Image (cartoon, rainbow, N blue to C red):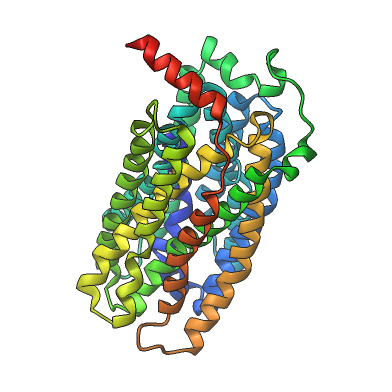
Length: 409
């Protein structure tokens, strides 16, 4: 259900990028103007990530989740009726406010009900909804939107209406014992002592996750917002071809999310701790993010498209490990940590999007208008992953894991 919610989340969010050429034409926007439109969503998302983080560690998540989904679905639905740029911006702001709750709530639920050694896989599964939604969106564009842009409003209406179905199903499948597990926060559990939230800022783990969170989010959201513009503007693909390319990119990213989470689980053995397996997989995933580097040689679009797909797989794999690390900072404060870190990086991204658009409007680089930023986006996750190698290992848990596996044999 969290995978499906994340799918709906990204369909509501990604529709704008998939039809950006038509939005720009209808509302007379340049690249900088489009960047400001993305920034309106981003600033709202950043503010409400803080709200979501603090609420998710205290509230009944069985009810908070569907409430947030109804808000963002309503905003997406209303977008189909906008007539002015101001109305479009308002809808994007409300969309950002509702969507901000998805990850603090989902990561909090996994922290409550999934064992540590399996969290990277669980995170990879639910987070793959990002790429599932991003794959379904261009398919809907191909089915509903004509080459001249007619029909783009129907996209928002259909995707917005899907959220209501999810809410009904969620309430049915999370009843009984499962509802209690989801609702009960770590601070309410008898076996968990109360730890002041301020204490997390003294932990090395917090700062490692902050650096990793900032790097991978900056990279991923650069690709999410600007890869479609790069493919159309720099590599000269048509809007229809763009939809197929986005499908390929996000399908590969989806495979990366699940596969890398699965590998992190399989590597855990009596001789390889949970932390050690995560570090190895994190380095591997962040290494994949460097695959766009041949862009400096201007090799042609036939070579770059597969490389961009590999980058997508690497970025989604980094997310799976990132959330697993975040769930280990402090069980009581997982969602608050995510809210603070996510808000920090979304403020940065929202500030950067108009600047990226302005650069594209005013520069003509032989590699492409967006190429310099693509190269930077590929390096950031690896630098952060090297810092994450300093993550402390839980020796007591490793010894318990050995004992459990010996007993199992």
